[in-house]
Length: 98
Image 1 (spheres, rainbow, N blue to C red):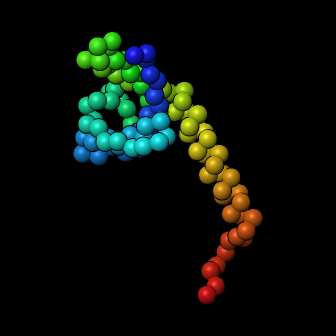
Image 2: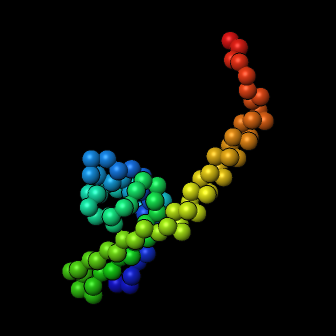
Image 3: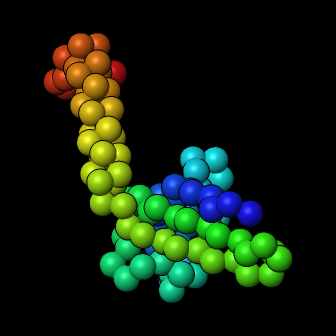
């Protein structure tokens, strides 16, 4: 089977359990020890999966993708900025009147 590439995003880490978003489609829970040292919430991971010809051996290589993480953070910040700007046009702020 040819090598498969996947994109994982670390959603949360708690009590040595990691919640991972896999390829933007599903979430899975994994033990913390599966990830590279220093992996943190919000980081993007590049995952390579190799399965040998017999199907008896599966190998995962998991790398922290710092470039993809920085790009994702920039995109997220741009989205937040756009929402704030749109909200500011609708709501001038100030005291709430009931």
